[in-house]
Amino acid sequence: MNFFKMKQIFQRNQILKDKFSNAILLSISQIISLIFNFLAILIIARENTLENFGVFSICLTIYNILAIFSELGIYGNIGTSLSKNKFNENDLFGFSILVSLVLSLVFLISLSIIYPIINIFYNDSLKLLILNSGIISFSFLFAYALPFIMTGSEKIKIFSLFNFSNNFIYFIFVIFQTYILKDKNISSYINYKSLSIIIGIILVFLILKPRFKNQKVIFKNIYSDWKKFGFHCFLGRLYNSTIPFLLVLLVGYILSEKSAAIFRVSFNFINPLLLVFLSFTQTMAKKVSNLPSIPKNTFYSNILISLFLVLGSAIGGFILIEYFLGEKYKSSLPLFLIMLICCFLYGNYRMYYEWLVLNGHGKMVMNASRFAFLFIALFSIPLMKIFDIYGAPIALVGSFSVCTIFVFYYYRSVLKEVNFAKKPELLDSFNK
Image (cartoon, rainbow, N blue to C red; front, side, top):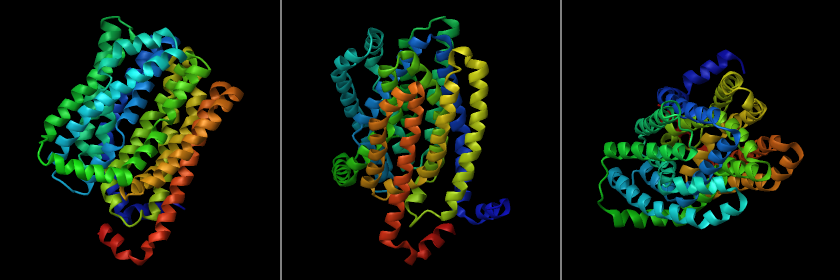
């Protein structure tokens, strides 16, 4: 496919025009906020020992896994209700606040349950860190929930404001603690992260103006949808989203806290790119869910976009690791380059993943994520035993590959089943 043909594809295809105009506008704010968070983590990594940063990474990983687990798939159903305009969105925003308060208790109870188990597998420094930072760690649940709510209601700009505000505030906190107070206490870094999320959440809901009408009716509808497909979507996200976090825990336990720090830094370099790809699909989520199918030309555009961003990230990552982090983290460079394959795969399958979720095929998404998770469970430890720390990114690439294969397989199977080829007028009306 030559350049002129690709140019014609972009000019003819309305979904690509919308995707670029909205996503580029969104990505400016998204990328700026990601840079702040990225730099904050790099400062913490640079100014602390490998052991301390490893413990910091494992603690953040535990909080992120608990946030994914504690939401139980409810936020996905709230997002679906918002995208389908089932209720007044302000009522749904109010319902989201009430649900979040309840699930915060689930988060904290879960943390208290697993705390003794953590103490068995990891050292006392992690135990002390959780004691000092656990009380407000429920904020990670809010940060995980917000994308579902903002995407469903198409409040992407407000979501960008949240990302910018909480990451910018966190960056300021890190600068203040590290270079003004001269304090490198890692529990303070985590508490500041939780506090910055809470400030961002308060700002968002002041703008959204939630109200608390029709809560019983909304609850019954959300619960009904949750029983039908919400729990399947939750299991899919649980399998899919916990994979990199699980690897951090495994690297820290099987190898060392130093290795966990190296792996975390490597993943930290690809995480902004993964979030950029996610923002692309979030801007189009509602329209994509109403399409009978995703235009085939979108597949080719995704390949080009993914290649361009991956190559740019490889150059930028090399410069930062080589000249900013220094000798201490040089071994993270090959891990980072291997993980960039994951970004390429993610950029190509994510829109199809969203289409399946928003069209009620949660069980298929769950199965794809389950197989990806199963790959990690079966092969990550043997790969780390054979290739040492390099086994972790190799396992991650394998997991993303499995998920990509199954997402496309399920997408094609759905199209064959419903035979959308008989309804070309739907796609034509969308493109107009």
